[in-house]
Image (cartoon, rainbow, N blue to C red):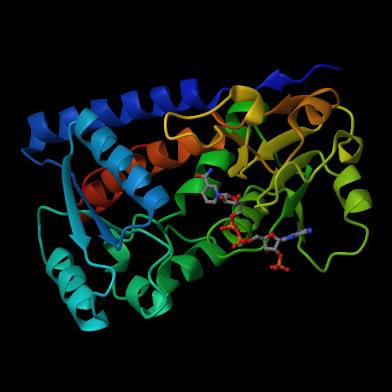
Length: 301
Ligand code: NDP
């Protein structure tokens, strides 16, 4: 079998176009422009790239984009003050504090200081609890993007066996919760799981969120299963030659071994071009949702 490639780039473009249409309606019919604020503490190069592209796409869909850049040695009090200011700003509907934060800052404390209604990352303890009890919440963007791709591909995932590899608070756990809320039968695997290969072989749906390059080989995949690869791992790629500064060029790979998994799966997301683009699209969608809720308006589907 050769798997169908689930094109996250194309899908995310569709989602962003829908978000853009909703933003236009909010502006024209209600005079409201949704606003997203991203707070970045420090100079982490990967975070800088994410924040830049988030800002660019926010503007592209017609929303207001605010970036608050703070020094790596920013105090907790100063960061909390910025978040408080954004919590109270009526033109800001979504607030995202880019992770990871420098070590001296308490990540839980900072995340829980964001107003739950503006917590477009869905990491606030209130939103985690709401999701866990199947209530209306802000849903973390990466798992939401994965769920949208699964629903788009399968229609319904009710009754399917799903295995999520990874149990982080930002990907694995909320992913498992979303699959459960959609009535899949869910197994969460992690570094202590015994015989991971056998666990994965049972799955109709495999979501890999581990952070280990190409860890899942094709022979773990049940024939025809759907594979969602969340992993983003940068590896040296000497075959691509050298960069201008003389260092070896790099490439991105996922947590699954693409070629061998694609040979057995029914459908698979590539890296890059799979889950990654969906994450930002879902962030924009969450901001529109937050804006609609704040103004008592109908939410996008
Ligand atoms: P974490 O490091 O927080 O979690 C990794 C999880 O994988 C842990 O639960 C860990 O288990 C588990 N794990 C580690 N080694 C093994 C193993 N050998 N077998 C089984 N499970 C294992 O990572 P994140 O959840 O934050 O991210 C996972 C991946 O997803 C990363 O590559 C990250 O870059 C990517 N990512 C991609 C995003 C996107 O937009 N596409 C967004 C966010 C993340 P244990 O708990 O026992 O330690």
